[in-house]
Amino acid sequence: MLRITIGKPRFGVEFENMKRDKLRYKMSIKNKERLSANSFSDNLNDALSTKDMDSFWRTWRSKFTKSQLPGVIDRCCNEAEIAHSFSEVFKAVCIPNSKDKNEQLRSVFDEWFLCYNGASSFTEFITVYLVQQCIEGLKKESCWCRWSDG
Image (cartoon, rainbow, N blue to C red; front, top):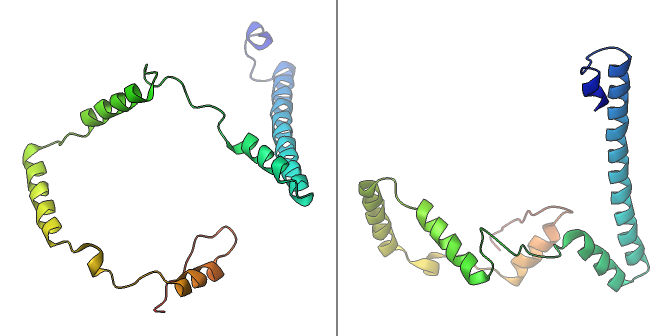
């Protein structure tokens, strides 16, 4: 309010004070966020180190679990109404742009589908050996799996 009252200065003492206070405010927010994250990590670490699984999972759920689903979606209150509303919206937006192109693509799909053999064309199967190789190949925070001929 003071800034507006004095005419939104772009230089001078008032401007420098405002800029300094804004920077302090942002730094304070960052510090609080950092402290909050550290406190959360410390609580999880303490629970794990003392092997207090109840406390660990309580802390975990408090951070990563949504406490409540929204009660109203698109002015609908129960699951059946929400599902019906979703289907109506989906039906409205998922219509072909061109009837001719849709029929052409449908015939291509039907032709390909008739030739589809399903799982019978799949030659490799998942074995215990392959699962073991994948697990041994895992690295921290990695989702890579090496496939081999067995």
